[in-house]
Image (tube, rainbow, N blue to C red; front, top):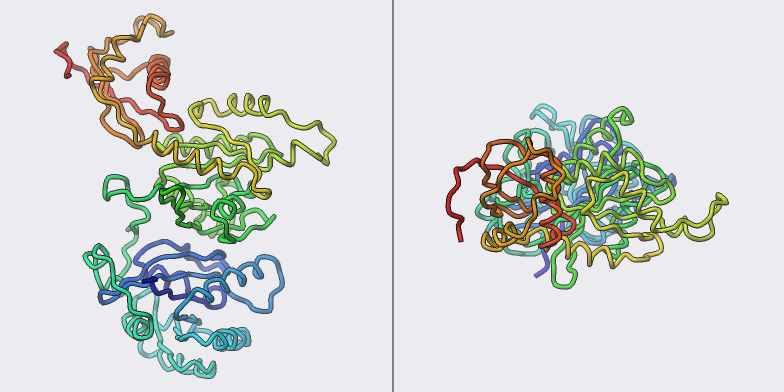
Length: 476
């Protein structure tokens, strides 16, 4: 049976994202005092009294605003309304009733779907009388709430779930809590979206699309999923919240996450932009594979190198995707000759030396060229990331290495008794040596290259740990 869907809508800055976070028990949506922070549709799950529903946070709707971003926000909200079984319209109880509220209420009533009016920011009982002013909107189900403090959230959910189609909660959701929405959010807590590997059995591969603003991340998400899931605009910084979509590809579940463009701290001025960069880093660190998107028309920049460094240092597998390749290979408007793929990749490898293990793909997300190769490469890299080599294989491999070929000063060399793979995702190897010292970078790089030549591990960093031990028989 299809999961029931609940849409949260309203004008900008009325507290929709705060309510969404309250219902889902997460910090999924960015919350702030600035207007228009949320733009795309954000999905989560609410559990109440043994039942679950899918909940959608939408951007602030201004029905008659024809500007590009507000119009795209409205279009995304219409997708949510079409999908929803019930709608919560959120208004700010501390403000006067405005004409845009009346326009939006009329639009929502025309959908014919169960409609609830959540008068938000009613933080005390003495303020509840002010909520009655919003009866003029003509919405019968009115509930005064405080999303921030959790007041009357239970009453709201009781009424909403009374009209939603019956669906059973999954066992794990029941085990967590049937009353999570009414409990206070603790700063610093995370949702299942941000759990670290090893805390649960992994059923899906998480893929984070990262890069500078305006390199085509949202266009790629839409091309990969075959939908208009994210707002696409020539305006840099359009995406703020991370937008994710779950898809099945060749029998594998992939969750594709489009993150906000990451820029230097000195370039971010609005609070929403600063928070979006923080959230992008968090989503990167919870992913398995990172798609580092480069703009072919601009080449490889210092910012690209910085962002790639974030992925490498966090142990994510990386695929470098050069987007907008069609713009530099034919019909160039700047009069320059068509770009050569081999030359571009050599320049790329020179700047991103630490990502030598990462495959490079040249695509056009707008035209759909080579987009299927991205998903095929994700599956290959994800499998390499989880590959495990037995200790016996590692020791047979160790016997074949000629360490004299390593360009390492004699004083920095160590004797390796044996080696074992201690973990996957990323592959982590423990070297048992005669000295408790950090491996010289040249020696570590030599061993890494030998491992890759023998076992692969394409697209993923390899980590080493050193343990000093007196010479002893190797384990089988």
